[in-house]
Image (cartoon, rainbow, N blue to C red; front, side):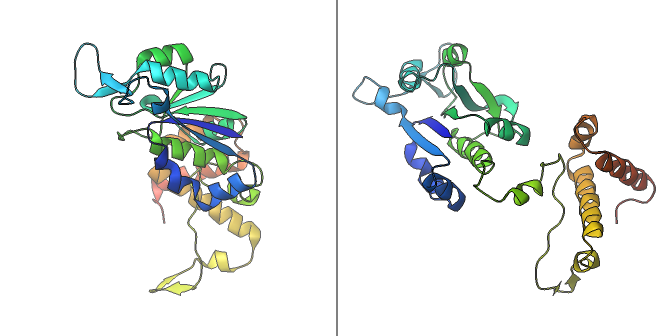
Length: 250
């Protein structure tokens, strides 16, 4: 898989590329990340990529000329282009799985007040948001998207780990424990020490559902509407929600 990252600050990604999982994926040729400096496509001696907005207003935006030349240099039209922006649809695990099936993804890193609208109109990128907050630029969001996709590529991390993660079945992940068995008076739940795999599985599912209902109730509606969700999960959700109405969570 190839990521083409168009940015004004390629040095931002230095630490990201040295991350254990990412560097391992790079060294094993499971992914390639090309950093394209947008300033290399400017034509003035100051290598300026931003300018004031027409109509007035605070802040600067990235000019269309250097950005378009950078996109054209990698023949971006016709490829999957992603533009992280607060105006985009909220990025989620489903999108990460979809992107992991694509051979080449171009990510445009905006700065300041964003990019010229004509780039969006001409190149039609996916506009995605990693959350309802504002960053100084899209580089952190680009790192988030790459990390979430790269870890899904075959062989990057163990498949069993992916199955147990939050959002793998639409639910948040259950609580995790390790040694010692007792820490500051707090004991690991007995079921996890029992060795009874079926009971452990049921406990984990119950805790995942409880945590999702408490912290992300918005996900429950989507899960119940998903035809791919197992009947076991549906039944457990209904049972727990009924218990919540009468007893509350333990």
